[in-house]
Length: 79
Image 1 (cartoon, helix red, strand yellow):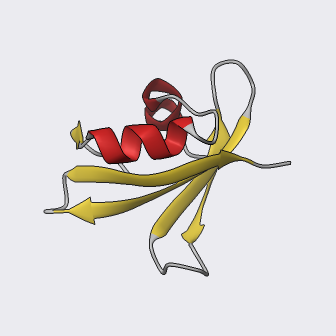
Image 2: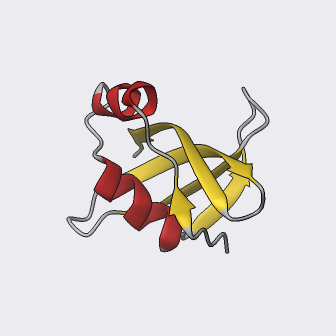
Image 3: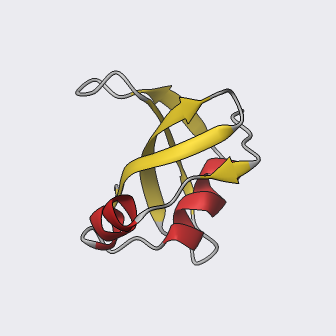
């Protein structure tokens, strides 16, 4: 299970996930409480699937930097 000390947010990735209706808080919750982990077929980056506190099922894709940082790439709701 991935565990990160720091999520690296900037205007670009916050705006990108917002376009998919996901908040930074939801992204962090899902990544820290992962139910499924895999590698994205399109980007080769790590991804996790899990549930928000409100019960939404999200796919979250990220990059790992220096083994303790998580740079969010994208997130979207999945069925």
